[in-house]
Length: 181
Image (cartoon, rainbow, N blue to C red; front, side, top):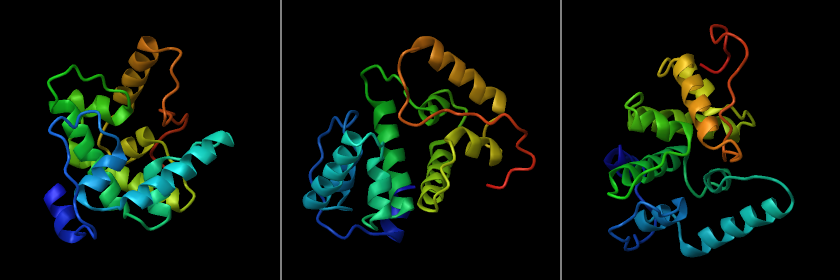
């Protein structure tokens, strides 16, 4: 997946050295490390993100970069998948926090499938359609609704006071007539 993205969308800038232990690196460091953004671009979007937070809005760094055409949805999805794999293979204990991480760690979803759905989700957000990851995974027949509900229930039981960055919201209707296939 990474090789394909590097081939189809080669980085425009000089790659930066990345530490051997990358398990806790933020997304921006991956994008810098692979040469997809410049330091001044990262500073700009982090500043915008912090400004949005001070105004009570939550904007994800990757979405800001996609909306400003700094990176494509493919590059964003690939870097998120690379970040996840680095976290999984790190020898320190890995605590999945997001739905996709839980599914990959439990071998219910392959990282490349997660990356594809993350790319779709990012593209949908650029079209002003915010669709939770769980809904897209079920619509794409990659995971069953019961698996999503199980993981959400377990995550909420373990961390009842923590609000996830991206909601695990599940629809109350059937997926059969969904418009986001």
